[in-house]
Structure formats: structure tokens, C-alpha cells
Length: 364
Ligand SMILES: *Cc1c(COP(=O)(O)O)cnc(C)c1O
Image (cartoon, rainbow, N blue to C red; front, side, top):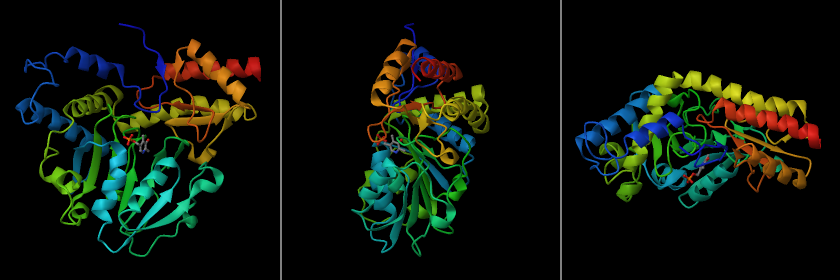
């Protein structure tokens, strides 16, 4: 096998090696089936089993309560920006409340504005999205259609520790970049979604977990492919679902259950990995300037600047020589972003940490 590098890509991102190896072993013929997962009908018995295990795997890991559907869609997280508003806001006569903590939330509200009245509950733009709202700063609309937030802003590297308190409003969450990284109270949410390609699988499949009574309120005339009820009623098979992606999600769930030991354990491992890097920022605050305020630092995307762009370029060039790949920050924040999702081995983070310590010794 060709040598693997330490892949810090923000997404599509590193996948667990055991998952890749299992997919490779079974690629030509699934055991007992004699055909590849790429070749079988989405209505075959073999795929029934894959879909059922993927669904149950997510239900078990996340503790999804009764009354919620687990659905597999296409169109990425970006289609959810539209679908959430089409299903929950369009024609409701209500206002949708958005908490804007970074780039993805901003894109989501832009789509909701096409569908109805929106209200920015809070916007972190003034400080370039480096912090989260304090509870007293949130002023919701009376009788909001829903309150929307982005659990982890992938570009800025700010992450909620727990869902915002929103009273009785239906809470909608984009959890694309920290899905399955820790336990979450799904029951606090009306709708919870994530594209797979950061932490849960390949690009092309998006998981939506939604409360039945909420999606039943959608307008009657939605195109079926944009109507959550169709996915719920047809077990995500109104049309051909992203079969290979669902199969990989199934393998990821198996890995999380059997090899990691569940989401609480995954969370511990993620906390320990992130601490290795934030510790360097805290010890060398003049050289490595963290973007996020310490109380909302993401465990998934560690964002920081160096004193100047020349040093940042040298840092990225040198990193490659240690097999530390794709560390360049997003242009809106600049600097460095280390995406350390579930599948990033601790060894990769340790290698980055040593490199950071060496680099500041030589260039600081
Ligand atoms: C990557 C990302 C998206 C966009 O996902 P697509 O599948 O490319 O549409 C949206 N929200 C968050 C939080 C993300 O990390």
C-alpha cells in the first residue's frame, strides 16, 4: 500500500483506516452477496441490511429518541440551507431565527431569506466570528418557526459546548463538521443535520434527523425530492439514495461502536488531541495566535495565525516535509487550520505539535 500522509483537510477529510480497508476488501464482492456494494439495487435485501444497520448505528450512537426519523439525503449541507427553510418556514407566516457564528450560518440564512421572514438573533461578524454569544445576548422572535445554529463553524473554528437555550422553539442544527465527534442531546432539537464528508463518510450523503411532528407541518406542494416527508415515508428511498455513501456511514458507525467504544469515548479522544495543539497556542501566544476565544475553541478545526504571511508560507512548506498536509487556513481567516476530525490519529496531532514547537524555536 502507498504510504499515507497526515491529512488535515477540512473536508472531504480523513477517514478511519480500518474503514477504508474494510471497504477495499469488500469492494469487488460483499461477503455472501457476490457483487459490489456499487452494483446492487437499492431495493435489494443486501442493501436493506446496509441501510438498516447504518440507521440503527446512528440511532444507537446518538441515542435518537422515538418520534425522530433518521434520513439519508443528497445535495450536501448546502441543500439543507434551502430545505430547512422550504419545509419549516415557507408559508408559515412566522419568522426564522438565526444565530450567526461563522461562514456557514451566514450562507444558511441567505437561503432562508428566499423563503420568508428571517431574524438575525446574533451575529459574530464584528469580531470576525471568533466567539459565541453569551446567553443574555440572544433575543428570539416571539413564536419563531425555528431557531437555527451551526454547532461547529468549520472555517473559523468556533464550537458550541452545548446547544443554545431557546425555550420552546424548534431548534435546527447544522452539525456537519462535528457530527459523531461527541454525544449530543438530539431530543433538544427539532432537526439536526450533517453532510458526511467531514466526520461521517464520503461526500454525497447527508444525514438528517428530524422530529416527525415538525416535518409534517411542511407546505403541501413541495417537490418530493425537497420534502422531508418523502424521505421519512420511503425509508430514504423515494429515489435511488447514495448507496455507497450510506455503506461507508454504516462502517463508520461500526468503527465508532466496536473500536472506539461510543461517542463519549470519541469525545475524550478528541479533547485530548485538541489539547495538544491548543497547549502550544497558549504557551506561545505571540507566535501562534489562536483565532477562536478559548471558551469556544473547536475540537475539530484548530485555527491560528503566525506573525506574518511569510512565516505562514514557510510553516506550510516545512509541514509537508513531515507529511503534514492541507493545513492552510481558509482565506477569510488566513493562517493555519488543522482539521483534526475523529479519524485523525493522535500520532498525526503529536507530529504537528512537535513540528510547531520546533518551528517556533527556529523562527520565533
Ligand atoms: C462543509 C460544511 C458545509 C457545506 O457542506 P456541503 O456538503 O459542501 O454543502 C456546511 N456547513 C458546515 C458546518 C460545513 O462544515
